[in-house]
Image (cartoon, rainbow, N blue to C red):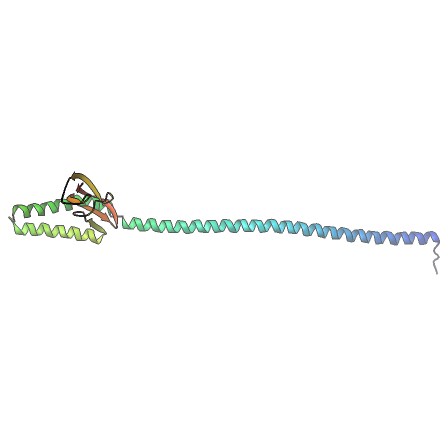
Length: 192
């Protein structure tokens, strides 16, 4: 059985084919546009995420640097704490050392009345000084030195023609430094 198409049917068939091809072209065009939009959206999203990653990396680097600085600061503080932990105790013991030195000086000036007592005081004084030195205490040299306001405390001045100016003429109280830090300046008389 053969179908017979009339002209009207042929025209409808051609219109149908054209509509189908137009539909296919439109679908293809829409797919291309959708892909293009998706690519642009993905590029935009990728750019945004890349920016976020860079920002997070920058934050990480700053936090890492801050942490390294914190570690160095804590180590320095710990080292200083260890170096100067005995400072208060040593400051409290310095008057006892001063008194022992005065006792030894007094005995030697008045004459040796009891040699055993004198020797005992000298030994105690030396033990104190050795213990203090082992813990970082150093006597500040002053007599005959140039006056240094960071290490010496001038309590008197004296005009002296024979000495140069700003020289320490006399020491009234010894000064001490603990691990290089002056904890008690020397009380001195200075020439001017």
